[in-house]
Length: 195
Image 1 (cartoon, rainbow, N blue to C red):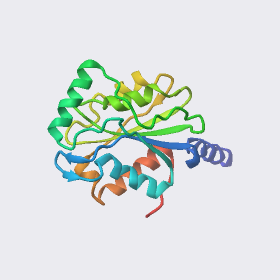
Image 2: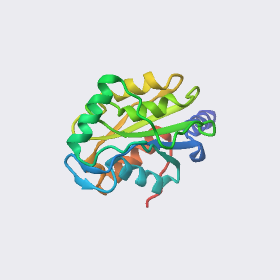
Image 3: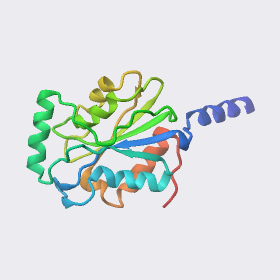
């Protein structure tokens, strides 16, 4: 009986990820957000702020060289063009090295049921060999869309886990906090603080 308990304890500990080996990479857009209105901080960034608050993970925000419009329809028009041409929008603050991290929490909004092309730009700049990606996103009805396949195609060598979608309007509420903490515990084996 004791060897079995010891084995289960070792298995549990092996499933946990060291918090200092986790990096949150995310893209989020302020301005007019569907179902939310005009905001100074995008829905995904609100979610990231809470994750950082309860974990102290390092983070990197993807900042476009050319900002997306504040107007929602204008942003959709631009993202449609980027999607149809398979554009790789330029990033102001390229991240090129993630060698210090084992796990990447990748946060993004869903646009037209897809991963924003600027996130694809960032993924293509990195070496994901031996890394694990834990996707999470905000949306207003598209769920994960096609984003998991987009990530797998853009980050060869990565072990891409199931995604964690939250509606953007819900992610902005305190009610979402328990869902986020449960995701961190169930996917990464990390007990988030109760802040």
